[in-house]
Amino acid sequence: MNYLIRALAFLGFFLLLFSCSEQSVSTDDSFDGVELPDGSIVWINHNSTIVYNEKFEIRRVHLDGEAYFKVVSSNKPFIVTTKLGEIKVLGTKFNINSTDDKLEVEVESGKVELEVDDQRKEVNRGQHVTYTKGSNNIEIREATYKFKIWLKELEVELKKLGKVISRETKKLGRELEKEGNKLNKKLKKLD
Image (cartoon, rainbow, N blue to C red):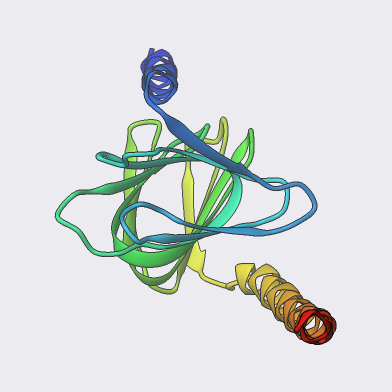
């Protein structure tokens, strides 16, 4: 019965999202970063999707896959919904990895509250929790911060992109300078 209620709530959330203007960010074999309307930052891992209301009056994000969140403080709650449960943010930096049958939350700083199948667990800094569908058990252990591996890969990609942009900007600047010189020569001929 509780599963049915959760499924209906999940369906209601999506209907609310679709009736309002929503933003959806998906990744395939790449990473992406999003600044939410409240200033919170989300780094999205490969093959993952986040969906949120464009106005963000209710600070709620739906996640399918893995993302690292850096949530700004507010008097409004920040909630991440997944297929298996909800994570209520109490001001923090944390990672969530959500699949069809497993939900993992790891807190880097601050704390969150995980709610799955009528169970609530507060997850503090340095803790990792895992819930597997059908187990009716939330396991808590010390965080390993494996998400930092893909965040480091993202950082490397961003640095490479920055170098490419810088190189192309310089190249474009030289080409514009050449074209400007040609234009000046033509203008001088007109005098």
